[in-house]
Length: 89
Image 1: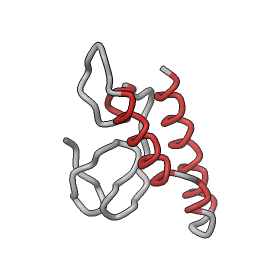
Image 2 (image 1 turned 120 degrees about the horizontal axis):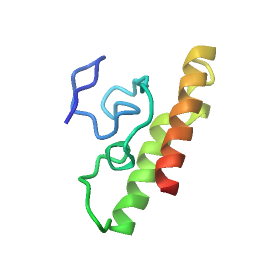
Image 3 (image 1 turned 90 degrees about the horizontal axis):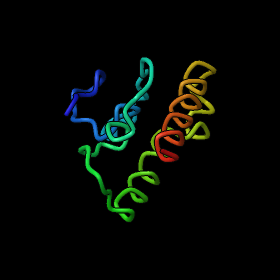
Image 4 (image 1 turned 30 degrees about the vertical axis):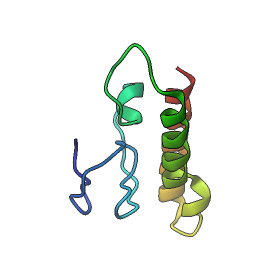
């Protein structure tokens, strides 16, 4: 499991840190399983996936970064889009 570059806490998702709330810049396409912190498998527990979508969605939602400046808000928008794209696959 990767560590947060800001606080070195283990990351559940490569998009943001649940411990310190730092948004993380993601380079290129992300594996949907990695985006949700899941092992690759043929089947995924739908309830667990929904819980992760809600939890990670709160971490990266642009509304939480409205006062953080334009760069942070733009990164939150990109990470939210990445999360939504991963969920659609």
